[in-house]
Length: 202
Image 1 (cartoon, rainbow, N blue to C red):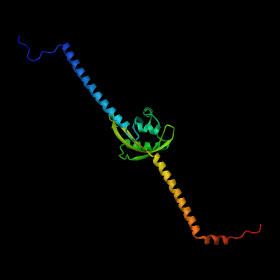
Image 2 (image 1 turned 180 degrees about the vertical axis):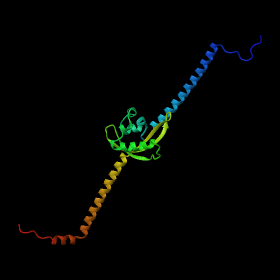
Image 3 (image 1 turned 180 degrees about the horizontal axis):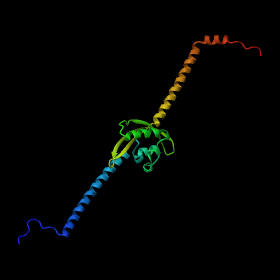
Image 4 (image 1 turned 90 degrees about the vertical axis):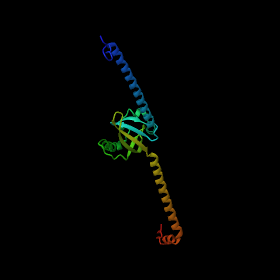
């Protein structure tokens, strides 16, 4: 009898071994891809943490990533911040404003700009900041808010000191001008004294 043309069908044992080989190859490929993605995530995370300005990533009002600069500013560790909700570090006077801006971003308002917001540090102190908000998709397409924070404390202190300096300079100029006027016009002073009524008998 002539042999059947083409390849003979594989026995069940051979088929099982072949299927196992394919599965092992697929698992190896998936492991390599997972390792590659983990490296990408680690590099992005490292870059985020090394940003010189304070920054947060927020999803559904939950802080999912906090860089080292925001940790230094507020006095919390990154792990502590990443266990908190965003409104836990927002000063009560700024919560309504930030919530309104956040809602506008969620519904697609393109106006992102800078917003004056006060934060609370670990001791409960108020830190006045400019916050730039940006909405984007992150990790499996989840809506995420990037908060880039600029501390205005030093600038505000400089402005207050400058204002006090200008005020002192203005008072000094007024005093100098007044004294010069009195010195240049002694007869007015004398006339004014001569015209004053003499005191009556004691």
